[in-house]
Length: 349
Image (cartoon, rainbow, N blue to C red; front, side, top):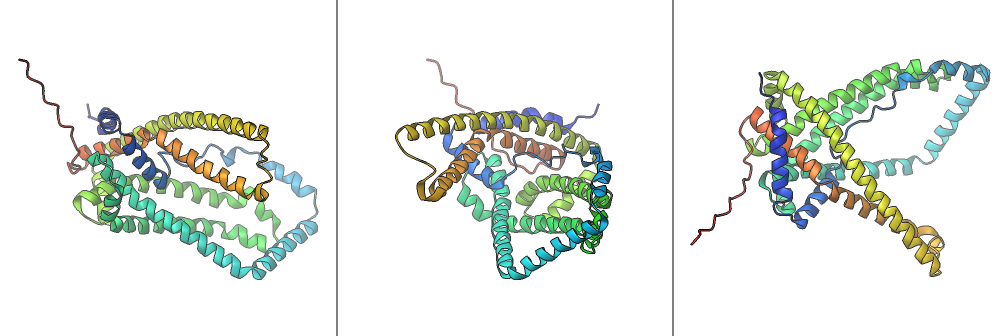
């Protein structure tokens, strides 16, 4: 019987997670890991396909079309397009500046996230979290990963835009029938296939990051090595994906339950604080026209997000150890895991 590496790695990942986070318990280490994970984002989740557009009754569009004449619909579409065009032309400078600002901020946080991917790997491998030193060592690796991820994202976006061009072109010409579902079949196909392809590539990138670190190669070279190894052990990779999917679902459910409990506690505390302040004569909705309450609410949301991440630190740590243990036994013995030093046994006199 074939030994499934991904299955065997579960027990080792549990042991490593316990050693890192609970032997001994170090709150400072948890806080540092929570900061890293907060910037990395995600947490083992994936895309949500729970609402399937193919399950809807699209025959109901016929009633919508019958209630208005073609002339009225065409006039409505042309008027809407005209108003949007006027708005865009009038505020083009502000729109461009806003888009550039959003892209700049998004790119900055994305780069930080990619650098911290390597920081997270080094932290769990060495069982020692030093954010500043690990960031300094991985600025170049983070940039390479950033470029690759953005290139994949841009390709996916271009494919989505191209799949929408026929419907968008028809709408701009006043053809309202292009709004119907059948005109977007190509979009749904491209979107689903794109997500699947990105998930597969993302799985290989996750395994390629340690290869980059410990073989000192670029992201494309590491990715090609991982994919080449996968081509020679397809069953192991398929089982790895299945097990990761199942574990991911379990982890997400557990994290969601913990998050819900924390949110409920925070809501109860918030209600209690609000009632106390109201009894004391303070009005939270009159201060600086809601500016102060708004900023306070935003700060509370950030604190709450950090607390949730802090409470769920063991889950991404376990998932990362599982991937690393799988990689060590599947690809090569390249991950020099820290091992705890056994305590000396006292001599009995």
